Length: 199
Image (cartoon, one colour):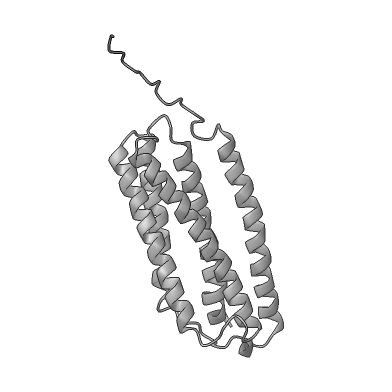
């Protein structure tokens, strides 16, 4: 009986960069989700101009946690961009470091947001403002969690060697979605936290 050597073909190179359906799929997802946040922020803006300033329980929302948390989310976007650039250059360690850092910063953002929710003097059911605040920020946190799952998946695949320089479309897709989540937060932060200071 002779020894047979089993050889497995290498993984096929799937869609690269913006060629595949995944790229167009995430763009369509972003378009629909942007519309959802547009509607929610429009509702908030509509009531903000219709009601007197007392409709906000805390006329000047505290920026003590929200401002640093915004910086954390922006830094996570920089980290994933840095990692994604590493994937394009074939630098696996940079890809892994960027994804891991983005994942860590995203988890910290969620933790700080939950902590801030617990410190609010209003609830989802207390009044109109509370309902809008928790609905808008709740939808955003749900999107952050989806983004974290995407980053964790891409990080795992990269660590296992499934993603590299020619196979980096999933990294781009996760990165684009994460940037979308961050941009949405800038609009949410501006509307809920900064706009009351302008009145």
